[in-house]
Length: 409
Image (cartoon, rainbow, N blue to C red; front, side):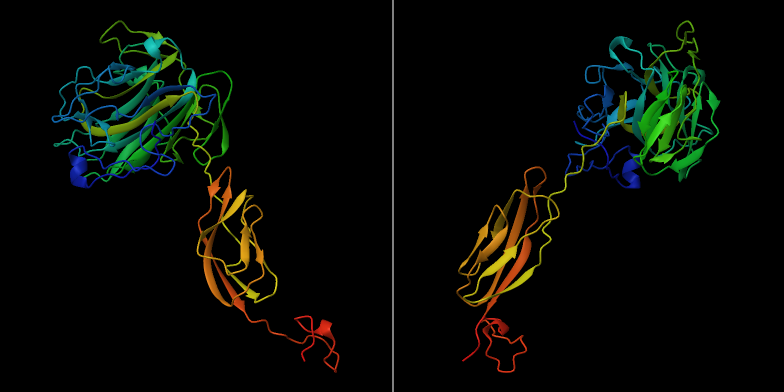
C-alpha cells in the first residue's frame, strides 16, 4: 500500500482536462491515496480508496464494485482519470441535469454490517475548471451518513457535510464550510481553487470523549457527540475539542421511504441536481484512528575531526566518533598510512606510521538498527617528528623536557 503525503499537480491546462501529475514517492515509500501505509496494529482500517487499482482508459471509465467492493452507488459523473501511479476520481457534473445515481457512495463496512460510531476520515480534493456558464452556489460535498445503503440527497441526511463552493470563474479561491444535519457551523474558510487540499476529520458520536493526535502532533480530546475538521493541517473547526454533531439524520425519502438513524456507516461525494461542479478526489481513507507514519530512521553521522597529524616512528591513535551508538566502523575508501590499521569494532585507528606524507580516506559508522552513515573524510598527515623544548632547565639536557623524550645531542 502506498502512503500519501506528497503530490504535485500538472499545469492549469492539464487540470482543466482532469489530469494530474505523478505522485511523488519518498524514501519511506510514500505516495498518494492511503495517507499512510503504516497503520498501527490496534487500528482498524475501513476504507482505503487509492484508485490505483484502475487502468486509465480513453475515454475514461467509471469506478466499479469489482475493483472497489465497498462502493454502494457509482455516480454517472464519476470517472477514473490521470496517469499510471496518479489515478484519481473525477466527479464532473457540467449542467443542472440530474446524475443518476447522484453520489459516489461508499459503505464503511462490508454489507453495512458494522456501525462506525467514531473514527477518522481523510481525502484529497482539487477543483478542476468550473463549468461554464457558472451556476451560482454550486456545492460539492463529502457527506458522512447512516449505516445503510440509502441515498444522501439532502444535507439533513448527513452527520457531517463538508462542502466546497467554487467562486465564479475565474476562480482563485473556493469557499469551504462544514455542516451537521444541514446546519452550517460557525467556522467558514476558503481554500485554493487551483491547488490540491487535504481534508482530515475526526468524529465521535459516543457519550464519552475520544483522544486523538492532531496534525501538529499534539494530543487532543474530541468531546462526545462532536467532530473536528482540519484543512491542509489547519484547524477549520471552532475548537480542537470539537463542534457539536447531530445525534440522528433522516434520508430525503425521494428514492425510498425516509429513514431516521443514529448509527454512522457510509460516506458519499455528490452535488445537488440543480448545481454544476467539476472536482477530482483521491486518497479516500477511513479508519477508527488516523494512520501513523513509521518513525523516521536516521543513520549515524560521524562527528570526529576530519584531520589528524602523526609522527613517523611514533605511536599514533585516532578515535572515530558518531552521534549515536554504532556497532562497527569501516574504511570506505582510500588507504591508511603504512603502519596504521583500523579496529572495526572500536573505531580506533592506531599503529606506528613508517612513512611521511598525506593519506586521504573516508570512514563510515554502522548501527544495527539505523543503518550506515554517509562516508566522512579524514586526512592523516605523517611528518618527521620535531623535538621541541617545553621545560625550564637552562642546561636544556633534561630528557623529560623534550617532546621526543630525549635531549638532543
